[in-house]
Image (cartoon, rainbow, N blue to C red; front, top):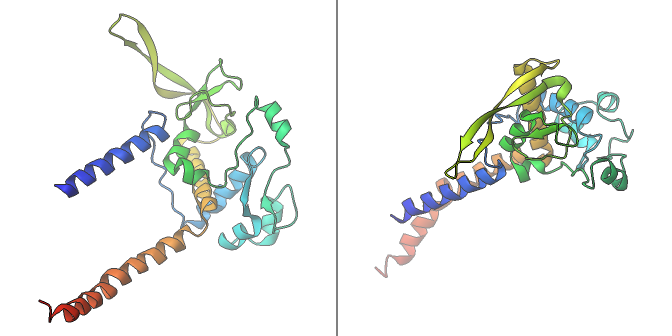
Length: 249
């Protein structure tokens, strides 16, 4: 009974957390793979070309990316480094804070170093997939995962433009409101739907990597630590306990 109640409470907590992170919508599954270096390399290219102009990743150094993703210094400098020629520098941007506040209505674009950990991979993937046209917003777009978003759809050339599909909802007081039930493609981009999904997946994969570059190694060490505790140490401790208490019992 206690175990069942514990699992029930844990499930409710995770459900509430997921609903909060997703802004009330069902999140798409990112399906990323940190072991796929080709995906991480493509994600790095997308990140520096579309994100790094406004968002920094100040906790990550270029030479760490090169070493972890098998990218040589020449390729690193010519394809991923546009604001500096020193591979030991962090991924900062040239835009000043006061200029950013002016451009984006008082809000400074956040550093993306640990966004994958704070928001979650599924939320990031859903966010990048669900921009749609909204003429009422300053940049002409809105987002299903982040209502009234203050960021333009920087990947619109790749994805194209989506428009919302509305459905009328009648309330008990007789009033009728419209709610968004989905998105449909209005103008095609340079990539097909499958290609854009892969681009976003690669980008989210890279953001997962920069949020914790040692994640795969930590998980591997954690597995062997648990294996040691349960398979090796636990039997030894149990036998010691029996030996110690044999005269007592």
